[in-house]
Image (cartoon, rainbow, N blue to C red; front, side, top):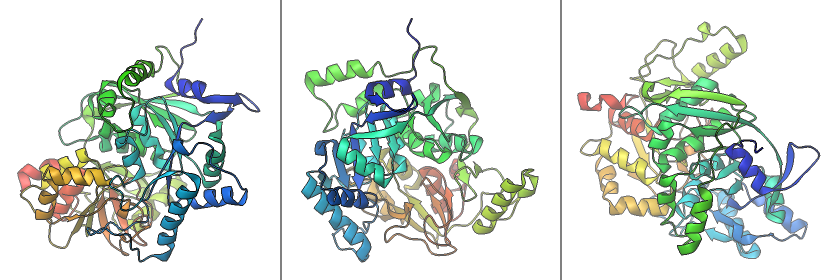
Length: 473
């Protein structure tokens, strides 16, 4: 009798080289790895010192994305000597170890979690590891991706395997239909707020349900990308016709008979009927509203039409202290409406929300309107191909006419490791994934929300409900 298996079981079963000390620890084969200039240097140095080679160079793709400037006139010059050395060392390592590199001036350059899917480098059924926690993004394609540390990167490069501990399974079923102007970012922010920043610690998440089936592949990437903010070590969705249509035209996807064979196998990538999960969570998409974070953790978020929470209503003393600290840092008063909080900056970009679909939505909101006085608004596309497509579609002209800075691709203001940094006291409406203290700059304050909500805030000069635009403008 066959025991029903989850999709997670199928990933592990198909990639287990051997079991180690117990059934929970495996030596796992990794199909692909994506490298960047920030998390790879120590791994390559370790290989050099041990006189080891890279086992399968063609399984790796390297990009420059974290430290590079995003100014409109792109060149290789970097004011930061440390960042420049990281970029040059990545180039040296890729040349010496035979790894393909998309450097700053490459026409395919961009944020790794945007670049890898749009190139067809990630395919359903693959197990992918990279030195970035948001490698979970690839789950939207029916792959299993997770982030790893520097020592693990070295081991992976040398052996194409990792020692892996089996995790528990969490199924998140999203029912209902998303209301107008409510997006996939709101789904995942609502989930994180509901279960907490540690609610999925020790788990992998499989997202399923009618609301997931209804949204696009790029929207699914946003959900899988941010699942890690609930502590998940992996997130994925069963591939379907939308995934196949997304991938079939990609440069590195299989062609001809190879595609037909691959697609036939990919259709088996789903949890079996009756498969058991360790934990189940349900969300009703039809009840959601646009979300915005108010604190310094992604789970400190609520609907834009809510109020800043009062820590004194929290009975747990440790959690109450956390809430009080967050409000002090954010300079917010309990009970104040979230709508109306003034901003100094608006940022649209990051591996969460910088794809062409995101930019089209933003263009639809800002067309014929203008950024509010006193707000610096930036749009940073996720890759050079996304930028080129936005230029070709006329979106870039809409952004410029509305008063947005239209920049080159890169991680940019997501994490303040480059020239795009906020100052102390700056308050930013941001389409990024993390709002930790100092994430966008020392003393800076970050409010997470969807790209459409960021666009609305940029126009209004304060946090506002994108659904009110037709009434207010």
